[in-house]
Length: 450
Ligand code: GUN
Ligand code: ZN
Image 1 (cartoon, helix red, strand yellow):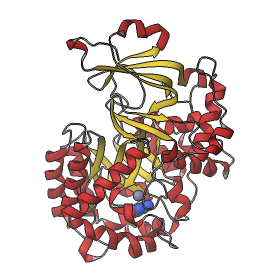
Image 2: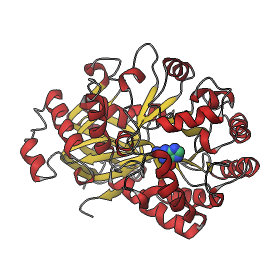
Image 3: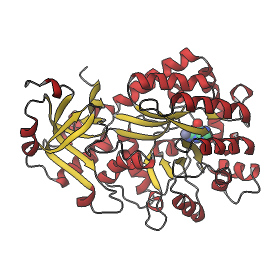
Image 4: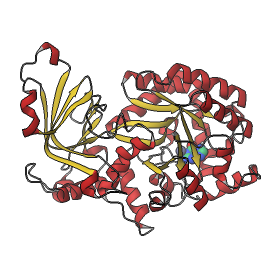
């Protein structure tokens, strides 16, 4: 390792093949949206990108800086999961039900355990290990109704220096008594948690009404009041996931023109609002989501597992009513922590609707698109100078099958078409097995060989 001067002690660098997005490939050409540097150097200072480019061009300027050599690996920005429930980790793969019965039979009894802080701490720790092992460095997370479950989660995330967004679930009806708060207590508890955690280090808070079915209008109004009082916190909920759910919402809110209107009336649809699913949205709802600059979390493994339906990605990414979209694993309705596997199922959901999801579009959804959905594109999502250096080191040859499918590329000669094809195979065939290492603000957070 080369010598470093004292002033460059916080500087380090990584060499390898880098791939990231600089624009949205759904709207501009591949050439304009994808940045591929076959033999690149990423230079970090205090965990942020200081310089990024061809190794041959910039390495001379950083000759004293220690370099970690990831040649032969493909380095992408850390994956961003825009919808997941940490208390549902242990109930992943629960058999046989669709949404409303699944909630009653499996989800609510599981979430009950999170009133116990030490239990919540143990699962939060397991959950975050699982995320990082899968290359996910940022997530928008449902905790449980108990404020302790939020404290437990943020404490664990803080220890790992992860950029995480989470919130206490607000739910005051249509669930077992043991899981209910009240409109007033949910407002007060959420407010206290916002003051305690929002913008503490890399942590951010999301006001989190579970969905329209489990909140009274009064509770939704108070959620809206929190957003007014704290304009830069997030709003995170479910929307239009399942046909029975949509029918129930219609019954509970007969004066609302549709599902989205229930949230709009409470002031819950804005540019920091993320709605999970959005499968049964009308044209009018798409228009209003687009106008208000809201985001949808596309959760294909969950939508297939719970038999919910097919998200219309082409409609969400249309030029007429564009809506911000990120990928969500939605564990435990979803069946994998891996955003690679989530992209695999997203590809199939697109296929079933005669839509195509290219590997670069999938990469966008999992990185810069997710960052945009979370209004975090100034901080994460690609390797632009100044951004926080969360990244994943992928091994395109991690398994015997991948070795056969993805022939070894020579870094100097590999083309964009070749890397697109290799990445596609990584999405379709890969999971945590292909994650060689994950770095958080430059620091090694996970390595397969560790
Ligand atoms: N709608 C309300 N709660 C939930 C949940 O926990 N998971 C999913 N997938 N949908 C929901
Ligand atoms: Zn969910």
